[in-house]
Length: 255
Ligand code: GLP
Image: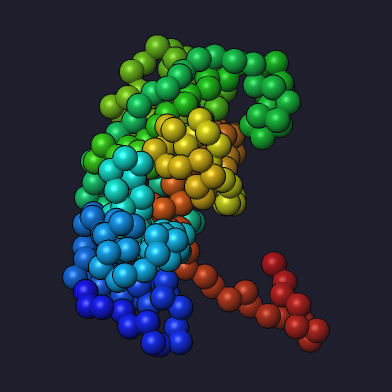
């Protein structure tokens, strides 16, 4: 990278930021490459530390860079692209992308459904559910933190199974003959709390995508309610959209 001139009326931090961004876009800097540190940028461009920091901070906020505590700043890895509107499992998605799926079971136990989970699963709040908390990994890297709830009566013995090396959806199908055929799912942005940040290896306050899903079998019975926190820096959800057919003279769409 060459010297950034001080005579140009574009803010210095912005010039450095642009240089780095262009180097990333041109492939001169590749995903996972270390980028110059604040100190190195300070020396190379003869700017203040604050100026160098601002360039790196903005590139990180825009998803170009990733800072890893104690290690340095790196070009961000490409995001995993996941369809928003198909009822697939984590295992299927990772395999489709050529990555090795994995899970760390953080806890698995039986609890009373409680009011909210009971209502979502359509069962009494006193009914037992299996609460399964897993950190999902792709090629060993943390991707998402998922807490699933499944009515215990549908999955006898599930709490005693080793769920670290298997797909939950595969177990539901093979062992319990439960085939999930549809689900409702929502997606919203949240910031990582201290504990989630530690588990997912992001900084506190980092953007996460919260997906909530209620999945049902052929009979319409709700089988799983799950809250998944996906790393915002690793995921992009995509959907194909179809324009609703406009009927009626007033331009309103009809279902
Ligand atoms: C995705 C969904 C979860 C579901 C999981 C099952 O991650 N967001 O709702 O529980 O897939 O994945 P697997 O079958 O790999 O355990």
